[in-house]
Length: 388
Image (tube, rainbow, N blue to C red; front, side, top):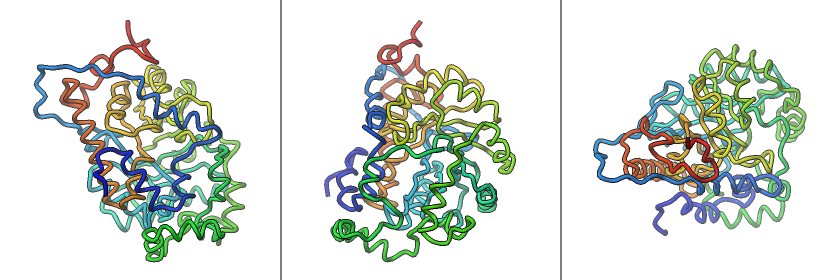
């Protein structure tokens, strides 16, 4: 096996080991995939200030996200169907995050249930909630997350309707996968993945089936999901969810300054500048482009994080230097998980941490606190108006 030194090194292994529909599910965006691509490429337009002859001993990447100590300002984002990228994937990713010292976020659309992950870990994790019409189900889901000891609720705001994801449509992507001739031929070329799936009982959406009224099978789940995204979602709807939870709240999916200001009024603890990894509104700004205006507008009032496009520790450094308190990573840990299981997720975190630490050093800093626009970044490029 080739030596893995970057996040991209995982991708060919991941693609070789995981069925096409699940690889495409992770490695794709909506419509033309413009936003999906620019989430990554826009980081290249931000430049560091290299400094020399500075004491860079005793460096640290430790920080806090919503009051929680973290080994670096990075959390694993909620990713649906993680347990189909690798058998028991959510459990393996949660364990890797716990051991490394960063937060893990379990998706509503996970394969392993809240209770599964809680039983397999020793520290609290975060739970992500989709806004749906079925209020009793949402209330029960919140209560289950509280009972499992989850320490924060991440409410996703940008999924009132699904973006048109052409690869998912063409692959007829389902969980578990439909056993069409095309899919069976492809899965037959993935023996490692098949053996893993044969060795686990977790193959469908365990947070939903058997918990939502009338959803007892994948057939009824498909109909329920199609009709249950809360198209009437408004800011008042968040009030009862936040009160029901009664703990730390993170609002995910903010791209607009006015929305960020409304999010502050909810009393949430953090917002995530995110375009759902380019999987919702194609043609929207990349998250890193949207971040500075939102930081300038509300950064003194609430923690502002970002996701969508992080592929390295240098990307983390750029986001933090622009004012983000932290970032969330989705695809990078999925690449590692699909390629190498729990060890792959750990390796991804190791790589990002090493890149972040080296970048801090070469910019003449020793801590996250010193990573500011003025200290780390050249005031030019696509967003140069922080320059006087």
